[in-house]
Image (tube, rainbow, N blue to C red):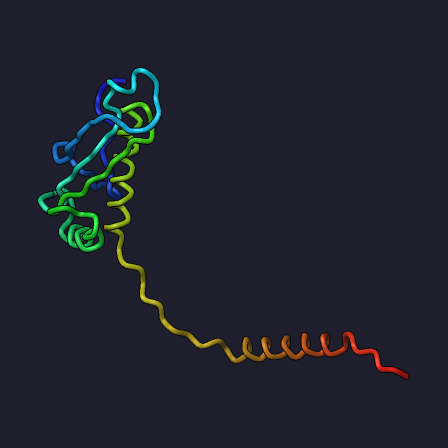
Length: 145
């Protein structure tokens, strides 16, 4: 199982170089057996977004803007401690970082253009309303003779 996890892919061919990632391991809180007190299974992954050269300039600006609330001095921190194995937690943290960056660098959505419904659509809608209304009118009322 040796070697590093696979690289953190942002989008397309853009990858965060391993050298820019800082891993820290510590004891996880929560349940576990006798082994839990000695194993550092909680993972913290830090990446200095502000100083990184890995992203194209446009993406970097976008990411800095969109992740502003999560950054501490330009550094993005992702934590994972839900698995008992450090390896799984590393994979989870890397995946989380990749997902965050993928979202943060995505191009802004196209602006919505207002359109009017076509005349035919309006007429069909009104016609179906009249029809429905007629059906409901015909229900219920029984007149005494």
